[in-house]
Length: 280
Image 1 (spheres, rainbow, N blue to C red):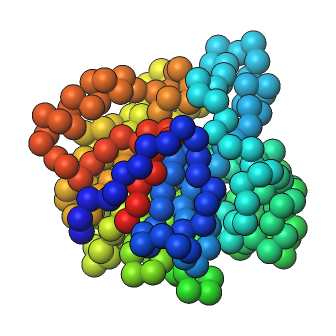
Image 2: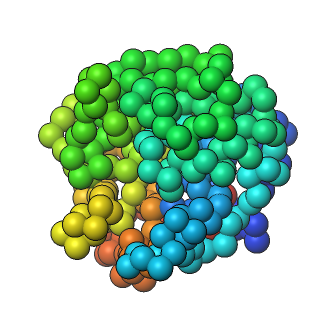
Image 3: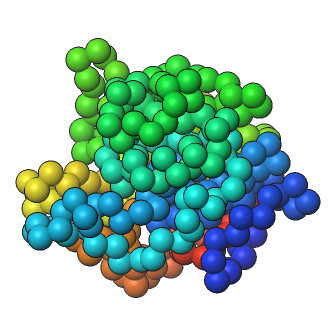
């Protein structure tokens, strides 16, 4: 697959792609959040478009104060067909954000892990709009196919009912397949779960992990090197690294990361950038 066309803008574009030659248009919303537009509708993945965590952790060691502004008001995000949440952590499943999206989109379907179906963060979503996802159980929403696979937020976790708590999603739209891993670190079987699936675009977290964060309950993800290795081993067409720049205790040195990418000599891996549109 060829590299995407890249357009740098001052803000998030909410224009539909109906008149565009692009099949997919992807914009970063910060952290693990992405706005994905296609000719068959708009998908949002893991949007965190509030400052709810700063209020929750005010005065604590890890204050969760946003380092980047909220790029778009969720109440003004326009028509949304599907909202995907990979797991229950608030920076991926934010009650304030999801309530606003649901209020403006009465027909939007909210795809969430079955393990999170009753999570309080979903209290603002009408029950009929919730779709429970299970690993290895594909679902078709019109002409969009979603195939969930397990993710290891440091470890694979299964609840008492046998549901994987952390999921990644393979989303096939208009002949292209996108993989959003959710929060994930390497695990035995990940490559096998991706085998035979031609991933054109991958969205991978690159903020890493360490004992200090884990002890505080802040679970980690791929390091940049691990994400680049997965992209190469799995044969992803183009990969965007994300999950940095939101909280000061859970970020990366982007200068060093960009240098690493250049030194690897790869042209199919890039760090997400606010205000940048990737067209495929």
